[in-house]
Image 1 (cartoon, helix red, strand yellow):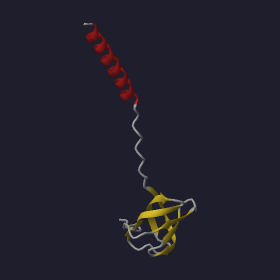
Image 2: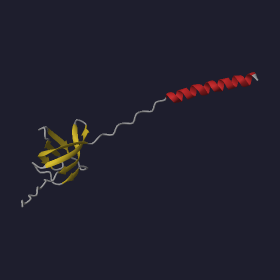
Image 3: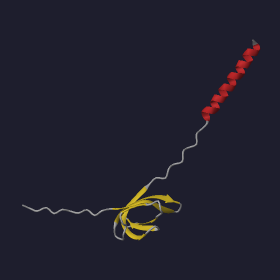
Image 4: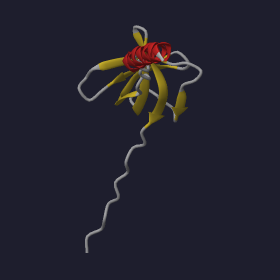
Length: 112
């Protein structure tokens, strides 16, 4: 009977310490995915397949690298309004998509 109590006490002690160790394990945090950032403005310089330089409403100039994966909607010619979605890539910024904003046409109404 003494052996049985000794073995049970030893097993319960081992289980208690093992459960405490498992409960204290911390999972590594998941790395954050890079967010897509956006800027809108006027095209200053566009070099097809290389770079685009945009000036925003606050007169800040932005330069983005263009890769083969960059989605381009429309033709980003100088003075065109564009929206650029980008990600930070090392020291620079890489455009993920460029879309030309169509000019709004106002309809004139005739007075009666």
